[in-house]
Image 1: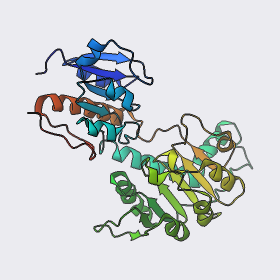
Image 2 (image 1 turned 90 degrees about the horizontal axis):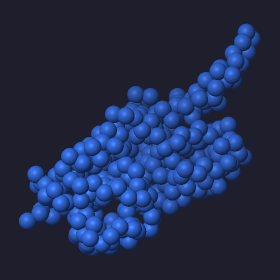
Image 3 (image 1 turned 30 degrees about the vertical axis):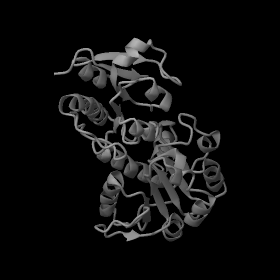
Length: 322
């Protein structure tokens, strides 16, 4: 099937299924991450594919003279210098769709937990506080009657919207352009949407346009009954402004699965009772991570067998291998 001399480089850690599947067909080189690879030139010249779960910068790309394909473990691929890869004719792939349902399910669960404080209620019970005459305090918020604004309406955003419909909430969205085939109310700016809704679910990627756009003004517009849920990127939230808004009662609550400088979580968030915090687990189930790993491997396998990977990113469309 494949030339046994082809080497696939694995910088850092990756799901073991990737190693298992690719190891049957290619020589696997595992190395530590860093600014660039510290491997002898002859070995680097054998590398024609990379499978990674943490990004790949220009230094790494330049060090691999015969690199053809970079397979990323995850939907977001902002850690890869895609523009540089494209300039060298290198194809980049990601793992869309296979994790849509899991992330959407997590977003709904995080919203419910943030509104109804179920993690706090369970901890209260486990601490032995449920006794005759003692009840957990009523949750200050409810899903009932909410107006949810989706910040981002890609594949995952649409799945979140579908899951929200049975809750009988009003659904709106903001993206850079309107979706013609979507019936939800559209807002051309995030500010306009924040002024109209009481809940924002952020599911946007890390781009220059999304950097800390959820700032003090957006949080103020959501108001003291407002809720922010983020399952996209911590990059999109001004965490200092969020901490201040939650602390001062200018925002009701927040549920976060992502943070600006992961795995560092600001102490200001950890100390807030109205913040529900998860360690970036939206897609973290065994079945979903297995499917992601299989797609990483399949992208590389298909590139070297058919010249067409399964899920290339749009910035680097595949060229048929001649």
